Image 1 (cartoon, one colour):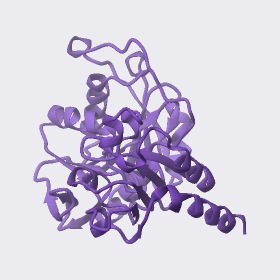
Image 2 (tube, helix red, strand yellow):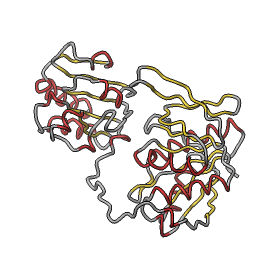
Image 3 (cartoon, rainbow, N blue to C red):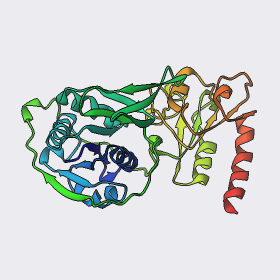
Image 4 (tube, rainbow, N blue to C red):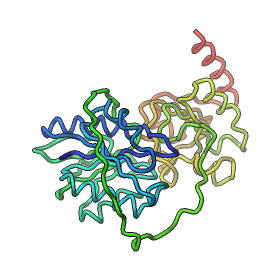
Length: 326
């Protein structure tokens, strides 16, 4: 029986980094409760990832395979997750607050008859109860939430939890699952996946974002900076840039885009509206480049450069190349 259960997200045949983050955190919570930690993996060929989650603290790995789970369907995945949680007596259930997780968590919670503490950035135990800390009011304050039901369900913001190796047995157990197909609300006809190889915004360690100050769709300087940093970096955009058609919506950072928590966030020509700050305010280090010294982004930035980004970035990229070449 696994009192602490983690949902390990698999996308496009790859185990998401969030699965390792949650397994590490679940291991810590399980140790605090004196319990086992189990990871649920779903879909075709899911068993191949069992050694990966075992490396980060999974005592058990529950494999759920069925024809209906070959591609993501929120109804069938929620049924499967709720079934495993009930069968294994889960007291804590952790899911990533990714696009996938934000769809799956409430459906699974409804089937279990419990609540979800969503978008947490850290966890602690208080008398055996899981306490989730989450930002509120666009990051202006933080609140601690406790679920009074069992299992205690929570989602964690990607890229905020520490990944720690803590090898455990990772014993594999296959779960028999026959979905109630009468409950299906939709059928997946086609998957349009990003095959560019670009790191997802929510998992990037470094994000260079451009806003209205870019003046147009030419993001070459930002792409160059991301290229210098390497595969850990990617390019984002503000809502104004996306609304102008300069970047796709998948690049949007903010309340109506993606919530990100990179180690380094560089905001270029972004004024820093509340909507944007809500999406990137929890970044570990924020650098702002803006020619307006009164831009709100400077109140949130750790480092600020007042100047024309088209003059600053070429020098920045030049120095960055020199620094990383050493």
